[in-house]
Length: 116
Image 1 (cartoon, rainbow, N blue to C red):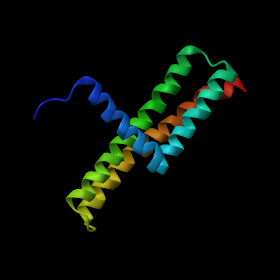
Image 2 (tube, rainbow, N blue to C red):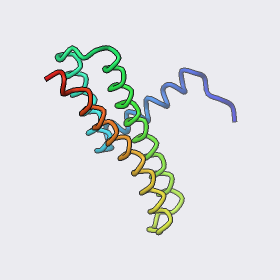
Image 3 (tube, helix red, strand yellow):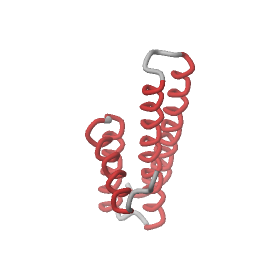
Image 4 (cartoon, one colour):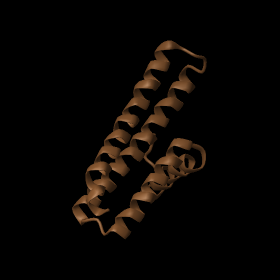
């Protein structure tokens, strides 16, 4: 199979992100958290290094959610009916997102208080 042109690869990636934005509730919530952080960073004048940490962890959470959704959709495609092992795979994938989200919360609790 030939590789698609570079522009097509970018369009495919944007299509996947667009699907997430329109269809996946958790991704929408996490985008809302990113928006709140952008507003806080701007209005509280958060130091550049701290802002970079906040934005990096937000990006990590969003990327993990993309991967989690990909794992879940692949599992559903391979084995559409309920299966204990498939459920465990999906739970582990969701756990990775939750771990990053909790880490993001802790980072926010460490950085933001001094700005209030």
